Length: 169
Picture 1 (tube, rainbow, N blue to C red):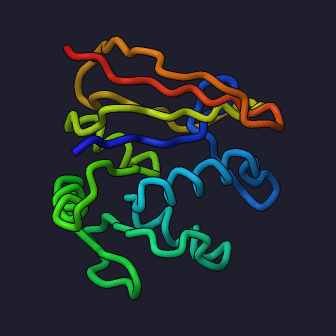
Picture 2: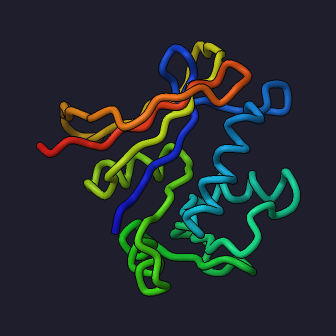
């Protein structure tokens, strides 16, 4: 199964953090919703999913949502699994050939560290943040991985989307 990691980064390379004072860019959110509908699914961590619920509503329609959590076992309307591989296995059993990994940073880093990501979509927002989280290939060892640029396009509002295929080591 092909797995695509989707994330918004700041112009200075941090994993973008949003808050009520600094909400995510609408262009990036619109792109995520379009990607999720096109793939028919997305995988998300529990805390990120709770943040999505707090913002109200489900704009995704009939999209299969998989929440990865080791502490919560049941959330109405979504599938809850304990590991990244469980999420991919579930979506494959449902007939999906591509999985969209949507967040948060800890889950992204777990998928990357386990070598479960084939492509990344980075939406670079026109903001800079003094502190933030980073996306890591391996949290225990330094790694270097070539990537291949597949696409680059403006989404509007100063947001630029970069899409890369991860290289083979």
